[in-house]
Length: 198
Picture (spheres, rainbow, N blue to C red):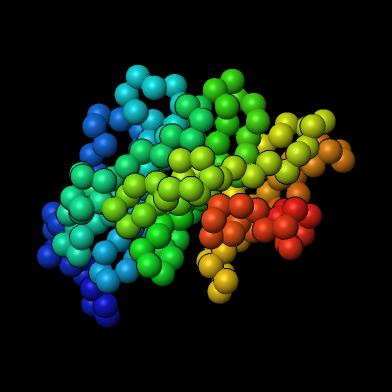
């Protein structure tokens, strides 16, 4: 929308709106946006046709609303953490072009839900040496309750680290507690934060 008139910006793609085509998915929705230099980086969740589990997708739009072909070749990339159910909830842009996408994932049988933090280079490729193929998982270790730990968002810190915020299962009772985890730029949990980074 144009400010202050609140009219659609018709120079932006098709009359002010963009429909993202992920190849005949059963469902898709964008959950987070971040901007830099008039480009828009987005995080989305897609249930591809015939699939039984969600996958996270990160992509980038140019100023005119078209997908940026310099990002992963076609403007978007699928982040499949464990070949199970993967969900993105946040996206953040770090200085130097690095992209962080946060969320959570389950194993294919629906168990062992952990916080996720993906790190991508500006071209959409996973950051080498950051976790396993660009993915860091954070497990808060609950064993007596449904162990689902979720990163609802990520914040960039002055020291280059990333703070994940969300919730984690707790062994006391049957509920969840607010949870934070700090990940260093190299993908390791920061042992100076909380208990082993959690």
